[in-house]
Image (tube, rainbow, N blue to C red; front, side, top):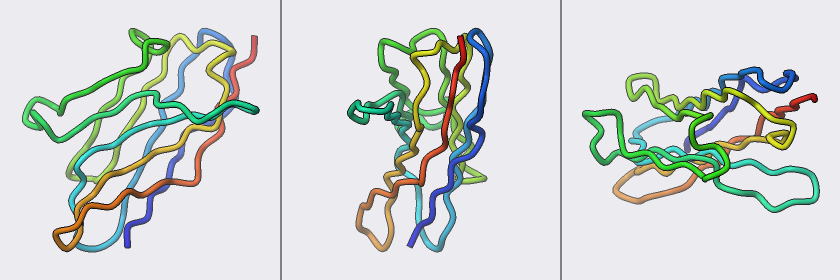
Length: 124
């Protein structure tokens, strides 16, 4: 089994920054990709950013939702099995619970693992 724990959420004023972390732990697994999602009250969960293993020597292939391009940066530390989401220029509409999803290979099978979420509140 793989456990995923997010951290780094909190309350910040508009224009401020937060850095979220997503740490995976367990035995005998390798991370294929790390994705960040968010869910605001009354809204569906949406993809924020993702980073894959493709081109891992250069940091991995990344993709961003249009609403965070230029403000958020996703990265990963393979040695620590940890992903990060640096969030700058935060807006009140970024307020949501942020979830990390990890796609990992264990015992030659591919699984997805979700964290419990971390709350981000951006005040105006």
